[in-house]
Image 1 (cartoon, rainbow, N blue to C red):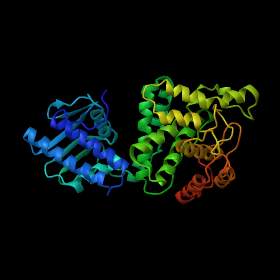
Image 2: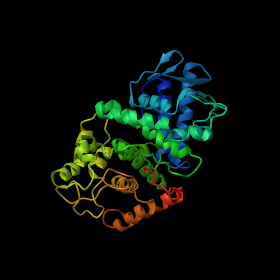
Image 3: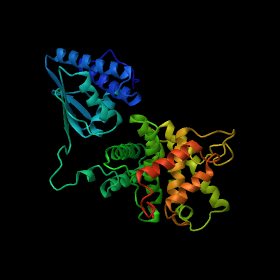
Image 4: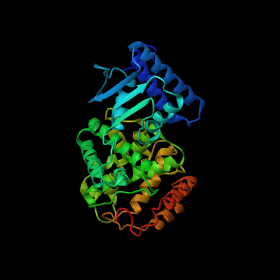
Length: 384
C-alpha cells in the first residue's frame, strides 16, 4: 500500500481526490488563515480545473456507492490511501453525492473543507453541491435530538460495536472508529454546552458505558486545547479503548463487591498491560491507543504505579487526559463495590491528586470544563 504523499501520477480526477484529501488534512492541522491552508485550497482549485479540462466537463460529480466512489460510470476503486480516505470522508459525513464545479473559489473551498476537517455538516455553495443522507428534517422531529450523541439509538449502535470488538478485533475496531466520530460530531453540533454522559443501566455494562464517558470527557479536554480533526478522533479512540484489557478480566473479579486483594488485585492491575498487548495483536490498531491502554494508570510524577516499567517514565499527554477522565467518571458512577459520589467531591479528589497522580494544569482545565459545561448543575451523577 502506497504512502500518503503528494502524487503526480494517476488520472486528473484521482489527482483532484488527492488535493481534496490534502486540503482537509491541512485544515485539520492548521488554523483557517494559515498560509499552508491557503495554498492547499489553491491547489484544490487548480486540480479541479485540470480535471474538468481533461474530461471536457464543467463539473466533476462523485457518487459514493458502497465502498467505492464513481465518477460518471467509472469507479475510482480504492487503490491508494488517498482514495480510501476520500471514501471514508464521504461515508462518515453521510455524503452520497458531491459535485465540484468550475469556478470554485478559495472561500468556497474553505466552507466545503471545514466540516470534513473539524466537524459539522457539509454545506453546498454556488460551485459545490452536497447530497446528504437525511438532509431534510421531517416535520415534528426535534432537530436538536438529531445531534444528540448519546440517544438510545446511538448508544445501542455503540454497544453493538463494542460487543463486536470482543470477537472481531479488526472489524470491531473500524466500527468503534465510527462511534468516536459520532461522539465528536455530537459535541460539535450540540446546541448547548453540556457534555452529555451515558447513563449506566446495570453493572454488566459498566466497562462499556465507562469507556464511552471517558472518551467523551477526554475529547472535551482536548478540544479545549484546540485539538481538532483526525488528531481529535485518534485521541478519542485511544480513550475509548483505554480499558480494553478489562475484557479479559473474569466477571467475578471485575464485579466483585468490596475491595480486591491478593491475587485478584494483581489480576485487575494486569488489565493495562493486557489491553496494550491485545491491541498490538489487532490489525489497524493505532500506536496511540496501545500507549494509552498501557499508561493510563501511571502517575504524572513518575513514581511507582502500575504497570511498572523497567525505567521510571512519565505518561504521555493523551494518557494523562484519559487518566483524569477515568478517575472522574469512576468516582461519579455507582459500581459493584462503591456508591457514586457527587461531582464536586470527584473534582476535589482530582485536586488532591494534582501534582502527584495528575498534572495540576490539566486538572484545573478539566475542572473548568466540567463547571462551564453545566455538568455540575445536575443533582445526580451521570452513571448513578
